[in-house]
Image 1: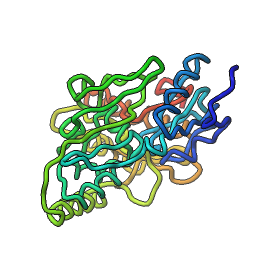
Image 2 (image 1 turned 60 degrees about the horizontal axis):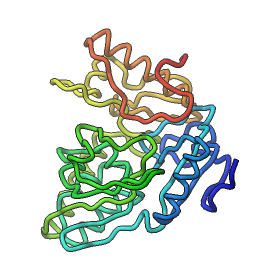
Image 3 (image 1 turned 135 degrees about the vertical axis):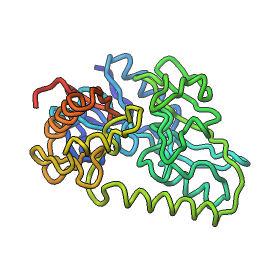
Image 4 (image 1 turned 60 degrees about the vertical axis):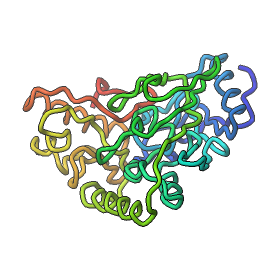
Length: 298
């Protein structure tokens, strides 16, 4: 194997980087801080035929207990910056949405308030067209820069194929930058909106526990995934060190010492009950790394 770029280190415990806190080590962790370093890492991984995955803030991510035989990327430095350009906020893919909302509020720029309820980065939000409280990234995204081993491309929501919890950003591509088109408003009015959203989130979702965010995409129709699983009697249902949240059934908590296999067992049970009671095949939002999936034994 050729020498790894300077920003790469081997055998890193990815559980330290995930909000749910489960899973084994990654073969490599890369922390590129510039566009040049990111391109170098992607070319190196491509030449060595290594899988790659961006962890962002580690939410929406479940890593196999056996680990991940590839390169985990966490963007840093200028790839996590947040800048103002008139009514636009230009940020690196590694910038947290919470920090973007805070900066935009201080600048009197409105439109990204819903991001206060999404525990992730700008890049991850673009990739998944993340949304909350009636807003989605495609509503405010003007343009994103996506980098791969062969170069970069740029475009807005249409070019990136953004739809409900989806985009065409490939598995070997990284969102390096995003420009958000916002609108001027009074900072106090924006703060009030953000505070209201944060209050609703605290009241409706589990707090001060380790989760990876919403497990399932809402299937459409009258019942959300959470309400559907609540009607299946799954609130508080546990396997090993993991349990379906007693607060909101579309969240799985690490109640202490959970393994990713425990989480998968809960997901299998939730999917089974939803299928049997409602005839619905739930589709998971959480991204999985390593030898892991809903077909694995419980």
